[in-house]
Length: 514
Image (cartoon, rainbow, N blue to C red; front, side, top):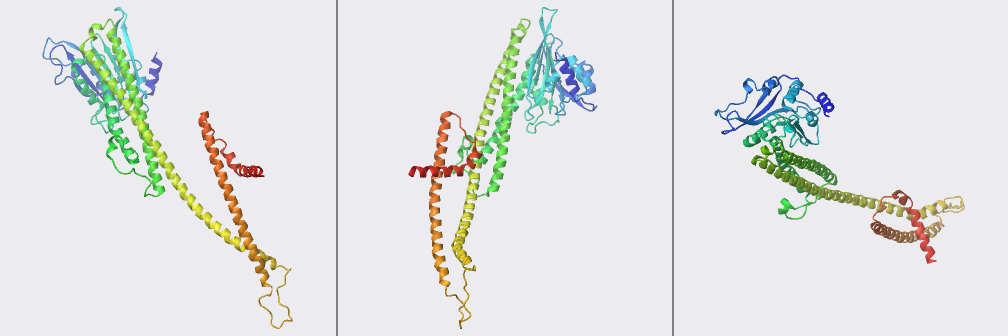
């Protein structure tokens, strides 16, 4: 069924055309007598692309090591090819296409290998090969695992095939930064190939077990995920909480004094820039935690898959005698421990995400408070401007009656010039008192009328504000009882109709009083 997907994957892969590129290999052979670990067993070394065929055939330099005990028999072992993923997209191999096809054929790799290696969210599957000529005996099992892709932990995949006749596990490890001197995450002192080789070297009694390599891959992945999440991500979370200054739980419990105010003593613009950067850092960390929650979830699912596969192998009639052993119990115990570790890590990441989400809500509240301060300053400035305009308007009002009277008296209806018959003409008209007689009373009347109107308008405004507050409280209580509110609906209409509603309420009040 995977023939079409495999052909498509072969076309999408970027194969190496550089003759200087090479791969790595790991070999571990288990013998019946004595210590299987010798100077050249297990072995981890480089392999040029042109030597892959010779290594597959175990010719010349690449033949299996010979033990000193002639009675020792080869029980099985591990043969693993390691290839670097040189590009993120498209998927690439540090070997030629011909070398890969030869490895796939010699190792009996599952047909979904290439398709799985291109997956980014994580995948796992198994394939059983039964011998139809021998009463359906299980002859070979193939397992493909592609880790959930996070470069801080590991972007690699493993495809293996275990032959129950020879007890030899063959496989291909492919990923980014898996080989020596490659670009892996800088936090790790060694590349994955060295760390996986050390894990293999530590358990020589399990080299013939079909589940060893998949379990080691998950062990390596969970170890890195746990280290990254409980050290680097936790340190980032604590640092962000320290910058925010609004939490003293956990390691921050030793802090004392008042809580930090990020806006105190700073210009509002600088504070908003600082909080903007803090918002971006918190959002980035929350996103990382969400991703690693998915990684931990994939680890738990993959471990359950390995546990089911182990149960199926143990319950197989053809392999019951070979797998019900202390080695199988050790593998099962390791799977159970890693399942618990992955589950705990998933909960740890979920709690970290909830902590940062709470801090993010606090940060949004702080930003709203700073915006309110800015709004208050703008309101105070507007109030001062309004007071100045009121003063100018009042002064203008005081001079308005005089201006009006002067304008009236300057018309042709009045003649204020002295007559020519007078010997001493008057510079100041004898009727000048008439101007003051009209101006002063009219000014007093206008000022008094303005004051009466101001008191009346202020009383109506206060009543309107109280009326609006009561409406808001009634609406909030009503929406709470109904479970759904209408907040945010019809705001434009309410603004446009506020003046009409105000006059309407005043009319209703006057009608009630009358």
